[in-house]
Length: 135
Image (tube, rainbow, N blue to C red; front, side, top):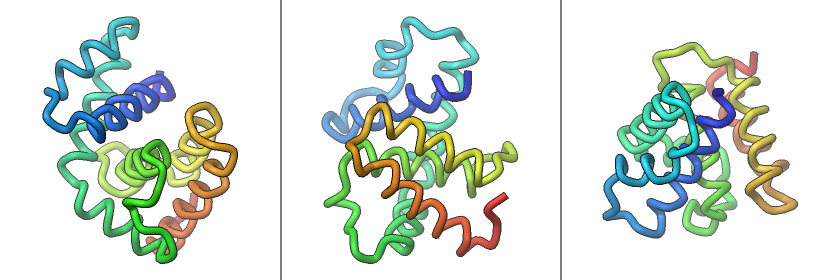
């Protein structure tokens, strides 16, 4: 269920990059039609958490990737980084960094480019090390 929720959150955040004035709930309802309620509920939590903490998330991501500006990152990569970083550092649920990193890497293999998984793994690993925990 959590993997599907993360994918739904990614799809929603990706769409919001291109249509920022779209109502989040409308987008989640449209994208989440074929998912059960708990899957959609966790996706809503992820999207809301990313949006509420976006400046801090983006600052942490930028700090861990000084050679890559956020604007230059592929939208899929940028939003997967945001979702995983939110789960690692802001979620009220305890998500171990290695789980959040692995999930983001696996999802990037489906939605990202050939380089996405290594790129995402490197940045999230750096963020986890800076925070002092990778387990």
